Length: 148
Image (cartoon, rainbow, N blue to C red; front, side):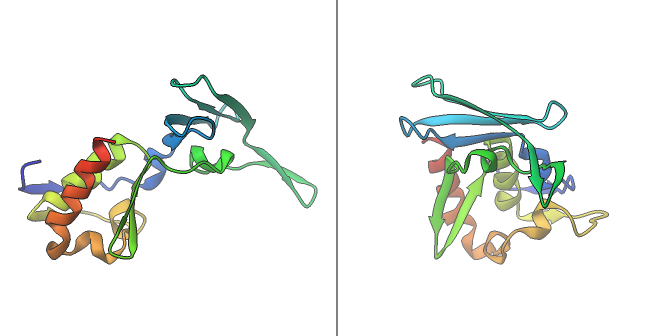
């Protein structure tokens, strides 16, 4: 990816959490966990082995029923597909769109932030993502993650 300017789009993590790439619990290959909050249903599907599981997003706690909205993989306790260790920390992404956004931010030598609200994805990133000294190593790692 070309280094240059990054214009923060004020994206939040929730914008990437409905379609999450995970490790299939059956064959260990890439699978997809998807959630539809409106329909209150989460599905985990593997195109390699045909594994399929479905769960409701509705939970009952202390006698109260509610619909919880978390990342799709959480409903199945699934492991993220796009996850790698980095200097004692972990670099992860829910899907390739999320990975692309992180890559664009990390690759940029000029990062423009306008009207941040303290709830954006980039503001919540650990410090090592922001450090220029980690840029080259992080971009190499992201490239490896993309080619899994």
